[in-house]
Amino acid sequence: MTPLAPTQHLSLPFFTSEHQHLAHGLAAWAPQQQVDERDDRSACKTWVKLLGEAGWLRYCVPAQFGGALAQMDSRALVILRETLAFHSPLADFAFAMQGLGSGAITLAGSPEQQQAYLPAVARGEKIAAFALSEPEAGSDAGAMTTIASYPIDTPARGQNDSNLTDLVTLNGCKTWISNGGIADYYCVFAKTDPQAGTRGITAFIVDASTPGLDASEHIEVMAPHPLATLRFDQCRIPASAQLGELNGGFKLAMRTLDIFRASVAGAALGMARRALAEAVSYAQARPMFGQRLADFQLTQAKLGEMAALIDAAALLTYRAAWLRDCVGMETPAQAHAYTAAAAMAKMTATENAQRVIDMALQMHGGMGVKVGTKVESLYRDIRSLRIYEGATEVQQLIIGKSVLKSLATSA
Ligand code: COS
Image (tube, rainbow, N blue to C red; front, side):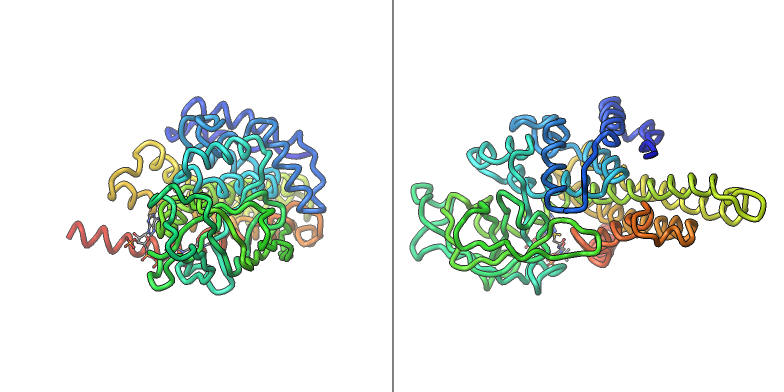
């Protein structure tokens, strides 16, 4: 029987009664869904449809465009991802990518772009994707080489809006793109001023059916989910597809990733909580040397360590989400505090979850490595979270820079 996602932590002062209501509703809904996940692409589409129909995707966009809340709420995102990941990491993936793939439109889209994409994302009718990484530009996102060229003499959007039908041409390659191949559109980041480094990148919305875009190269990974390489070959889009300011794409990508960083920590937390639940139930049932596995002090010590690792990650995760929701990011000091807190949460929650899941697997003995057991799949599911949306090493860098900056300021 599937265990219920724990909800005791919702009494912490980070959360309101609305968050509690959301968590209880989702914790009851999630185990009732039966999705055959053997084909990750069709399963992901099914999850998007189910999540859309049940209204959970409405937390990915603001109320003005069909969302559940006036503004995106980090604590709600954390609760949603934690609870979904507890039940199905693929359901969490489907949810998260709707948010990440629409986040830049929420932050910087024109009213027309927001109206054209966000309500459909919230209903699960359009599948979204975020295309930043390239074969030689992962952590170093600014090193991307995909080029977006405006015809000579054609102003970019915002400079002269009468030229919105002029075409921008994309050439290059994006890889590790989640939802690649099943998405209806991609938020693509490309160089518009190749000499200007991170200040020469612009975002564009590219519909999946655009000629010159090939998303057919599926990448197989250890925890299957839709992932592809995108190739742009003379791919022409209207200038009206420009998302946000010309050459403002790098900051837009960073701001989008910032919103979801705390929620990646939430997903890791959900997987770690599930591993602990599996370990406890196995230890209580498994007879060994005339008693139960749970009666051994060695088992109790491990369970204690797992619980503490989870709580440490949870507190950092909820703090980061609370900072964004309740303190805000209006001033540079606030934005700086949140960015560092989100990086700490993402790093700690994903690293701790990997340790917790490994301990749970070890406790299961041979059963832990048997394909099809929950801890075996969690062991594969958690691994990529330490890499994507800013690897642990990138989070260390962000935190380190922040420490230097704060100490220099206070000295
Ligand atoms: N919000 C807003 N602006 C930000 C920002 C943030 N979170 N982080 C950086 N910026 C701004 C900086 O303020 C700087 O602005 P100016 O040009 O006005 O000075 C600009 O962006 C460049 O910042 P920086 O010099 O720190 O850029 P780096 O190239 O050194 O990159 C890291 C820093 C490594 C932190 C960044 O590239 C990063 O986060 N990489 C990970 C990318 C990632 O997550 N990849 C996975 C893809 S999605 S699965």
